[in-house]
Length: 127
Image (tube, rainbow, N blue to C red; front, side, top):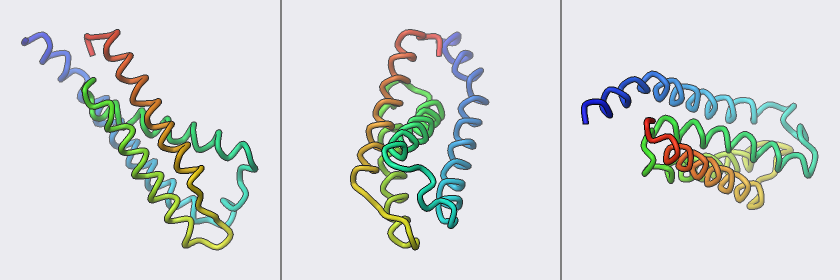
């Protein structure tokens, strides 16, 4: 029990760092997404690849910050919520278009990140 607590506390800085980087990602996504150069930055179908990569990374950061294997769903929930906010935000910006397809890719990326994190946590119980 004590050894597990020591291992968990040793990872606290990584979890805090993941939370900080995740918060910076949210701020950057919303701020940079509002810039005029964001219109058409990634042409189809590459926009979906960009969505997946970005939200997989964000989901991974949330999963690391959450820390526990049983909280894998936090990555999916956070990616779904941020994806919804991002798509809603796009409706207020000239030249940008919101889409359910983008949100579905965001959600899928969050689910994938949570699943990868849970699998790694299961394989490496020392985390």
